[in-house]
Length: 274
Image (cartoon, rainbow, N blue to C red; front, side, top):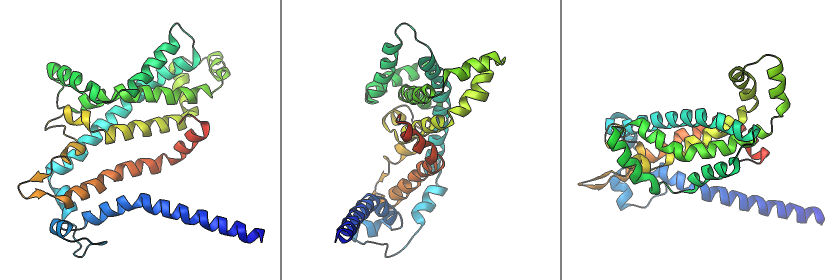
């Protein structure tokens, strides 16, 4: 009797989990479904799967420079942002984890408070500043703007990982004659490789999906895919099929990043800092 009750409870939990997963996957499926339809079918007919399967929407994105350059521009400033954020955050996080100095807690809180502010607060100052110094509509402008939000997050995550590394390792390396740069690169960074992976993932994801700053600070040459997707209205109306195909292709880089850093993310959650 007890075994039957346990079996029923297990089956009930399994059904709930399956239903929840299907609910989460439904928007993704519907996006793929729309991307394989013609615009006329999307507007006029409700169908669970395409009646006239077409890949013209993907062909349009991959052959039209106004579309595929959006992906290239996004990848350029996202990679720049991840590199800059890590270069700045690594020594800062090390200082917070190893030393005590006047105002360290206040400074740490100030960094996190920048991350709490919405991007809309800084859109106008960045626009005016970059227009004045000639950085408007460049990849580095968006990358630098995103560091305002990514560096505090990176410092917070990395500081937690660094606290888990015993200080005796630093002292032993100095006794063995290691300079600080050599010790930091060859010994310390491999010990926090999972933390660096987690940090790079979160910096990538924020910079990849952020819309307001990337749209405000670009116009033509560095316009990202998120901005391109908001300008698909033509004389014939909204091109839903192309927009859906662009959405599917936008998900792919994030999914690939998650796949390659999945082990690091799991370690980050296990350590309680993510």
